[in-house]
Image 1 (tube, rainbow, N blue to C red):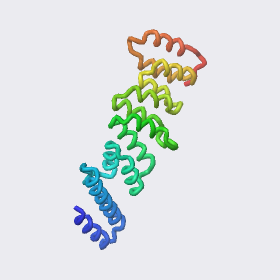
Image 2: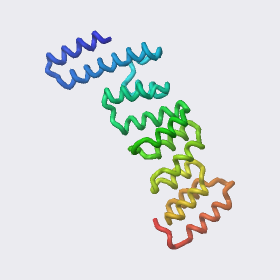
Image 3: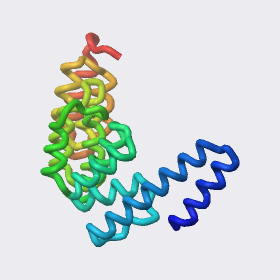
Image 4: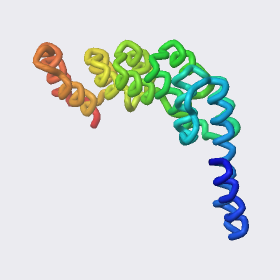
Length: 193
C-alpha cells in the first residue's frame, strides 16, 4: 500500500497538483504511524481513518499515544475533545472521563458529556455533568437525565415558562403532584418567555 501511495505522490507532483500530493503524503505518514501502532499494540490499525485510529487508541486506554497522533496530525482541540468524550463513555472509562472534564478550558461544553453518558447507559455519570451545562441548556439536560424536580427548580429560578413547559411535557402519569405544581407555576404572570 505504501508503494502505491508513493507512486501517487510522484504522479501528483508531475501533474503539479500540490494539494493532492500533500494529502497523499499525509496518508503515507498516517499509514507509517498505524504500522508502528500495530507492532507496539498488537491490534489492527492499518487502513483506518485518522479519526478512527485516534478513537481506537482512546478506547484501548492509550491516551499518550492518542496525544502523540493528535499533535503529529494537528487534530483541532474541539474535535479531539469530542473524540475523547465519546471514546471514554463507550469504553466505560468513567473515572478517566471525570478527570478529563477537569482539564484546561472545556471547548465543547458539558452537554456532550451528558449525551455521551446517556447514550452509553450511565445516568449517574450524566447527572454529574448535567449540573455543569450552560444555564440556557440546564433545564433540557436535567430533564434528559430524569431530574425533573431539579429541572423545575432551575426553570423557576430562571423564571422560564418555556423551561417549565418542557419539564411538564416530560412528566409521566407517575408525576401527578409535580404536574400540578408546574401548572400552578405556569399561571404566574411574572414568568418570561
